[in-house]
Length: 278
Ligand code: COA
Image 1 (cartoon, protein in one colour):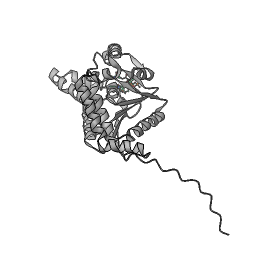
Image 2: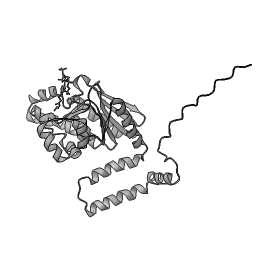
Image 3: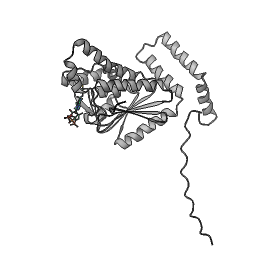
Image 4: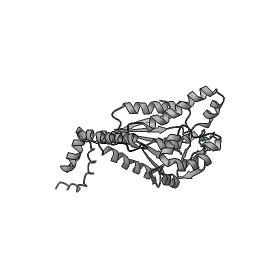
């Protein structure tokens, strides 16, 4: 892995950090390939249960590296097609990761940066974060990211922001549903992300994966009899699974389910100072 991407493990957590702070974490073809590889590795590693994506320095990500875009403009249409598939593949790899993903957004999130946010399951931002689908201002279009952004904020909001390229603040991103919550500052952002991670780790590991898969199976699909059958099949299998049995039994027996991490130990009580020996 190059210096442009950092991958850190904290127990079941994988922290993926874009690390081109002098470029506000704009990504070029090399970083795109590295991120795709990192997400594939995470997918294959059963010990990872949650993924947090963030940016080093002042921003989350300023989107596609414009020096790379400029370079590519000199290549043939065929070469541009192949190159553009790299970004499309990164977005799909992230959006379709079986594991839960969280975007930690601070500073700027523009263009492809908004795409990465939209590809994550949960997104939290600081109140000072700024957003924009600014491609048209550069004579470009937000092509690779469009399915995920449209699914996050809806066609109506896309009609405004894809076409105008206006920048918008964190309050607007929250109102649009692009981010789920806002934090006062980066320390508060980390606390709030910690709470989301705790909630994910308190849930049945297989159930979380099955819940994510369920969303993909039902979202934007007509409620046909096949779909009803599919949802019935899913819950039937899950409630008869070892995890489903354990979760329900733990609730009824008023105990922690087997997968729930034990609470951190209480800090040692202050002991009275020892009496000096007579
Ligand atoms: N690609 C390549 N370089 C970028 C970049 C991008 N997407 N975004 C920022 N940079 C570079 C700047 O060119 C600058 O380089 P320099 O130090 O060699 O001059 C450096 O990062 C710092 O950016 P700067 O604009 O000076 O910082 P700022 O704090 O004033 O503004 C942004 C930061 C992100 C708001 C601003 O750079 C910006 O609007 N970037 C374009 C984002 C965009 O439209 N992305 C969509 C791409 S399709």
